[in-house]
Length: 91
Length: 182
Image (cartoon, rainbow over all chains, first blue to last red; front, side, top):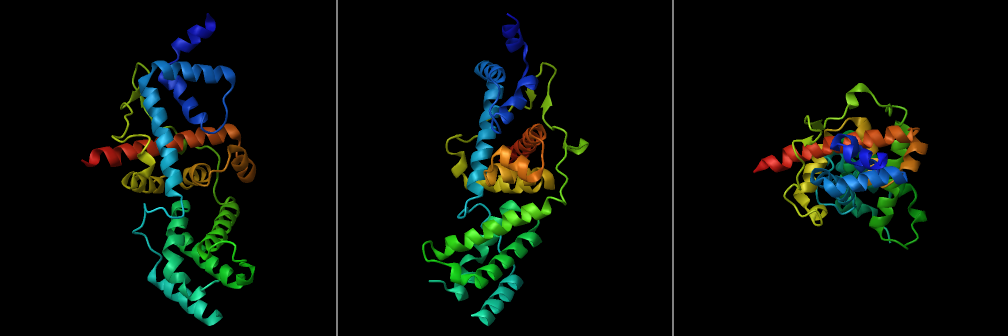
């Protein structure tokens, strides 16, 4: 009974740190159960959980070698010239 | 076959952008690309031709970036401070406010959304040096929590708390920069 009480008494504020935490390590059994139970009945936390997952997926994509997200950023012309000169001297 | 005289033209911007996603300071990113080219020139004989030139250069850069993270750890205090407080608000009933929404995108396809990734890049720049570093290590480099704690002397509970708050800041920033643009 007390477990049930603690599950249903939990507000989003109590539960939502677990959503992020679960992305970083595996939760204990009781915390995992509490999280799952809450997510099943709370749409807001469910959406929040999706947001964090989207952040993770976006970050992974942003970090790829061929990511196009910041394609407007370029190495400064000065540095490029310096490097090109250096390379010419060395080969 | 390596063609160093074409490196700057073919790879400099690509390597720079890869670095800029991981280090906040453009000067540091600039320098890391330079040291990568210097190191590549010096170790041309180690290129076995098993990978492409591009992959080989990226391999060197990745080492340089991790070296930078390790040497910079003295300069970044990775403890929790008052400035790191959680910025998510709750109403009296204990619900998140404003209510989170799905950012008007299909979660399954969100990661391919270039504009959304641009907003994330911008929002990441707004993070403190500390939160930026931890988020990069965890979500971009994909290190495990154990690896981060060990390598950077962070207590696991502190790491989880800080990653949580960093994600929350990013989420709030994404919402104000993405959803309000229409």
